[in-house]
Length: 125
Image (tube, rainbow, N blue to C red):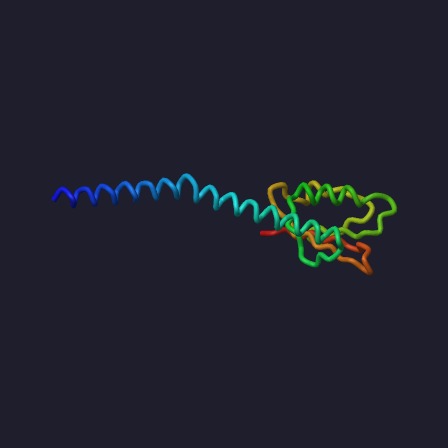
């Protein structure tokens, strides 16, 4: 009967060590790998956009929408910027009231022979 309890005790110790390994090593390592994959994906998206091969919309925060509209919408601007159907060209008035601060937007860049002709922002529900 003593050997039976020794086997049970060894099983419990091994199971506890396995649980401790999962909690202390595996789960944090998995979370770190997920974060690294997201960063790599964002970097790839940025590089593709800079190389003008980007045809997929990027996900941006509301403050990025406001900054983009303010940056481009000046006198002499030829790039049409559309935010949920409202167009901005040379004037950025009213952009703060239109954009919801806690929302995210899909940013689509439309090009004509390599030059940007339109930037479209669509709110993501």
